[in-house]
Amino acid sequence: AQSVTQPDIHITVSEGASLELRCNYSYGATPYLFWYVQSPGQGLQLLLKYFSGDTLVQGIKGFEAEFKRSQSSFNLRKPSVHWSDAAEYFCAVNNNAGNMLTFGGGTRLMVKP
Amino acid sequence: NAGVTQTPKFQVLKTGQSMTLQCAQDMNHEYMSWYRQDPGMGLRLIHYSVGAGITDQGEVPNGYNVSRSTTEDFPLRLLSAAPSQTSVYFCASRLEANYGYTFGSGTRLTVV
Image (cartoon, rainbow over all chains, first blue to last red; front, side, top):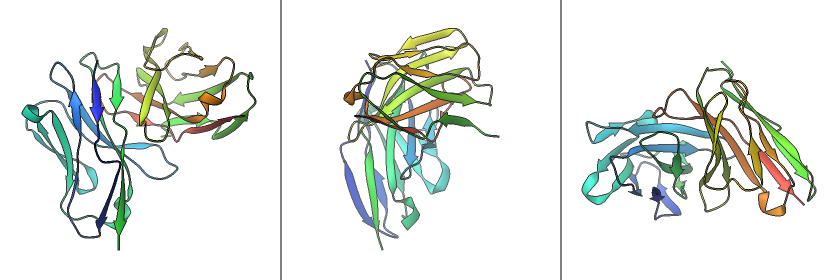
């Protein structure tokens, strides 16, 4: 069965600082990977996705993520964080049939002024 | 384009009551899913559907039923509510297997 681990439950960064959120997955075949963001009281919004090809993928809001097969990781990065980036971030992995998307436990990002 | 619409937004039930959470999408998406979100546990899949007339169980299906009579609608039924079902429920849909999901805004359910 597939699984996703987000080791950091909470992260606090200063506005303007760089950000990296960690995601490790477990899946037997080539994974389909996603990052979502959830603002308080809202649903989830897709930031970016990886299916194949270039291991560095660009998303919305200036985010990017790098797929590293050797480390089973798909870390999310942003070079300069804005106060509006404060939210909860979820990494997810899809099975190859595409019918089961499994989420990690989430990382809550706080941004200091 | 309304996207994914969930109703109600909030609901309080007494233990043992039944109810249906509604989910509708207007994007002609084949894939629809129900998730529950609990603090520290991310989102867990309850049931999913890959098209009208086809449903299957996810990770935590017990106590819930679904049906998919049309492409647009995917209601979630709580048969006999229990306090352990207190959660935020999200419906999501996507066009094909490996597209990103579009999520509804959620239903916050409290069972007392």
